[in-house]
Image (tube, rainbow, N blue to C red; front, side):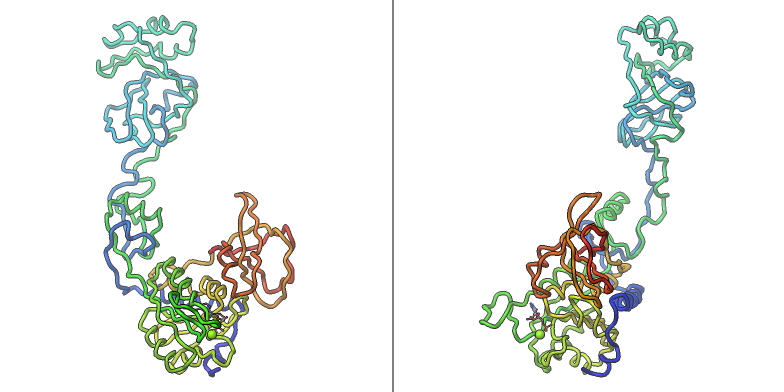
Length: 456
Ligand code: AMP
Ligand code: MG
C-alpha cells in the first residue's frame, strides 16, 4: 500500500461517518451549480435550485375544515341553540352575505367561511329542523314565537328562537333551522387566511428535495415547472478479472458484474445520474485509464480491489493519480476495506467488491455524497428502533450492519437478521429491508431487547 493511503488509516464507524459528513457539508455548500427548468412531474426526486414562495395567502380565504354550520359563537353562549339557516356554501362558492346574529350558514369542508361567522360547528353536533308547513307570513319579514311553537310541538329547545323578530331581506328567509348542540370557541374548525403561509413567504428553500409533499406545495403555488439542479454524474467502475458483463456467458470461474447495477440503482435512487464504465481488469494500465475516465464525472464509485490481496490495485492506482485519502478502512462489517478520498476536487469511494459490502458501504457513506452533490442538505442515516426477535451472537470490535428484516406492527416492530453466507450473499440482501446495527462493544444481543436498524 502507498504511504498516503497508509497515513489516512482505518477509522471507527463513527469517525469515518463524520469525516464523510464533513466533506459532504462542503460539497453541499457550493452554490454555483448548474440548474435546469423541468416540468413539475419531472422534478420528483430532484433538488430545488431556487426557492419557491407563496403567490397568495395559504389558505387564501378562511377555510372551513369540517362539514357543518358557520355560526357566530356569541349566539351559542347559552349552550343548545337553534339558529335560522340562511344559506349554504360549498367548496368553491363565493358567499358574501354576512352571517347575522341568530343565523347559521350550512358549510362544507374546504369552503370559504362567510363574513360574520367565527366558527364552524361540525355537522355531528347539530340537528337540522325543517318546517315545511311554516306560515308563509314568515317570509314577509318576521318569524314569531307563536309560529315556531306551532310547528314543533313538544320540543322546548326551539324556544331559543322565540325572541328572534329581526326583519330579514326576503331572499334570506328560509324555513330551515338548525339546532346547535355544543358551544363553540371562536376560530373552531376554521383556518384563517395566511395561517399556513403568507403571500410572498418562502414555501420551500433552495436545496429542498422534491418528494410528494413538496411537489404538492409547488402545485398549490401555481408552479407548472421548477428550477432544479442538474443531477450529479456518478461514475461507476467495477474492477476484477473474474467479472463479465450481464449479457455475456461467464466461464466456469467467472461471475457477472452485479455491483455496477446495485450501485447504479442506488445512485439513481438518491438523485444522481449513474455513468457505468466498462469492467476494469486487475491490471494497472487499463485500471488507470478507466479511473481517469471516471474522474471526468462529479464523483467516482469503485467496486472491488481495495482489500489486501496481491491484485487489489485500486488504492495504488488512485495514489499514482494524485489521490488524497481521508480513510482507508472502517471498523465495520461488512465493508471494512472501504476507502474515501479525492483526486483534485472529485470525491471517490473505493467500495469492497462483495455484493452486500458494496451496498452497505454505499448506504453508510456514499449516499450522502451523492445527495450533497445534487445540492441537497445531505441526510443522516435513517434509523429506527425495533425489538430483536432472536438472540444474536457475534465478536466485538466492529460495528456491524447486517441484512435484516423489520416487520410487525406500528406499535412493537420486530427485527430479525436474515440468514446469510457472508458479504457475498446477494440473496440475503434481496430478502432484507434494513440493516441491524450491532455496536462494536456487544458480543451478544438478547431476544426481546430494543435494537437499532438502519433503513434502506
Ligand atoms: P474484491 O473486493 O475485489 O476482493 O472482491 C470481493 C468479492 O466480491 C469477490 O468474491 C469478487 O468476485 C466479488 N465481486 C467483486 N466485484 C464484483 C462485482 N462487480 N459484481 C459481483 N461481485 C463482485
Ligand atoms: Mg477483486
